Image 1 (cartoon, rainbow, N blue to C red):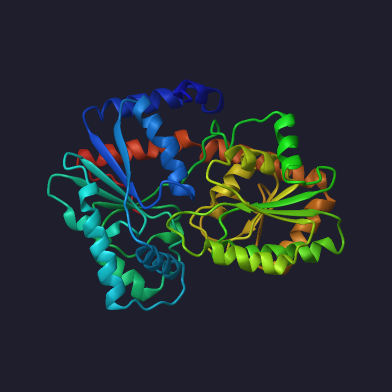
Image 2 (image 1 turned 180 degrees about the vertical axis):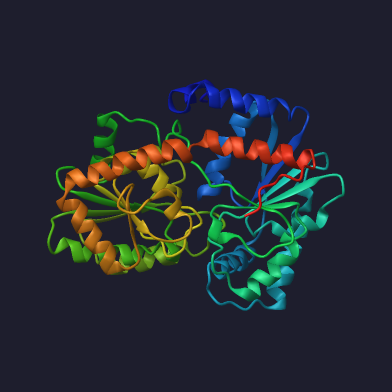
Length: 406
């Protein structure tokens, strides 16, 4: 387990002192985080790193995961897609199942918690168990810029019962009766996915997957999800491969609350057509070192998302000083200043053009990566994330009126 002291070389001693100062004011306060999956995706990853650090600071924080059947997660995946803009209609049977599953999970609630921190739509209806003495936070990790109105209206009845809502980007803010705060996600520079690796480890991972380290490597790390557009990534690669000899790595895992992953992977396999220069890697949950090595070995990293709450893989790649080309959606533009810390694109053709540009101009690509790393260091490391949460907890407990509205 890493210690808070180890972050000093990245953020300075003053930042750590500030965290300790805020945490001391939370002595005796219990905070319960609840989400829908223990592995897969950025939410679980952040909680897995943050809870131990909160414990080191003396904060009584816990993390629990709701349970649900296959049908429940099919409904919440449909809800997830609708909140990203896909038009959906939910039957009474589906909304009843959503409420019943949330009610069934009410026993996961710690009766003595002072603050309940609920993540994303799946457990959102747990708010029906709210008591007067406790505080409830709803954290939205997804792209809320253009939600399906039917689904939004349905969820809104629960969200407005919370004390505060958190969004990752200003464009996600909605018309709500409760305060909204902007807190972007973060990466942990000391995690297995982001820590420095010896060249021998990187080389061994490439050898394991039969990837040629002598030719350019273009990589996208993400779950096999329609919104990450892996099919579009293959089309981009095919356009570029006509002019530049390179390889494509599409690597990622699944999440227990995402039933569409296997279907998306099958579609990508079909379009890849057993191309020896396309590597489709379905990685198990404990593959952080492999992901780290693949990103560090990459010439260019892509994140061609069609919708994106934030896109932690962008921050991960930038932290490794890699040039990144990403979709100009959701929280990604917070991390990439176009033509300064990366390149933002909107189409397959635009992404292919940007990729050719970076592969043919390594000095420009290197400068983008260097600028990107510094941007991440200043804005998107886990210590900043901890600070934002601690301040929010304190403001709720003190019933202050200084919550920052978006």
